[in-house]
Amino acid sequence: RASRELTIRTAVSVDAKALAEQFLGGTFVVLPNGVDIAKFSDATPTATDRPAVIFVGRHEPRKGLGCLLDAWSEIDRDGVLWVVGDGPQTSELKARNVANVEWLGRITDEQLASRLKGATIFCAPSTGQESFGVVLLEAMAAGTAVVASDISGYGNVATNRDNALLTPAGDAASLRGALREILDSDALREHLVRQGVARASEFSLSRLAERFVSVYESAISLG
Image 1: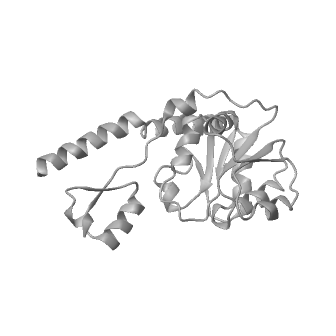
Image 2: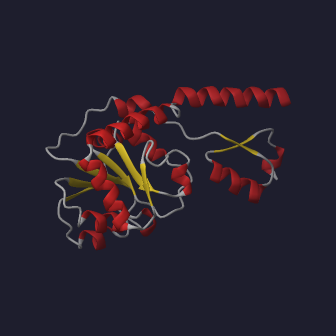
Image 3: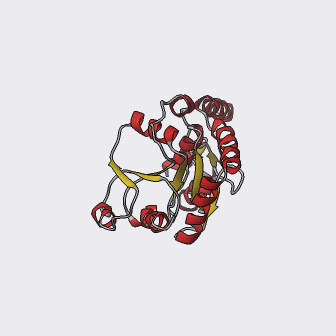
């Protein structure tokens, strides 16, 4: 009932908009989450002497860390996998003893920005239930190439072979191939980084503020 009394209703993504309209009724305007670009672009990169792939998220099945570990175990490339976060699967996944993995646990926002800035690749292998890929935008803002699952939530911000490499969710072989492709090609990595930075800028807080002002002005005009 409350949603019907609002002049303008907003949702953070096309998926969230569809869900809200299905269950709440009415029409919703998409106003995505914004990103503090400078927080990530100006971060001091974590020093590393080899390429680093970073995963950030809760250690639970839908986040796909198990799939990433399967891919990483046969990567056949020099590098390190930084795993940020924890969760119900942490002990089980650690017990696999996959080589060249650093389990970082929970870290501060400042440390996360530095890790994203220092990484070669940000990997988001989620299997679904992601309404908006803000963490992809944070990695893009940091100037880090993105590999992610080809799911609708991430499709809100990422386009395959333009600003990211997208692979079928749960497909360790495809994920491994995408990671190898970036690690083996400076040209591809630089292309993804360049396009990713441009994409992230579209979701800057200043641009989001402009869109909110426009929505508020529309609401006022509607009375």
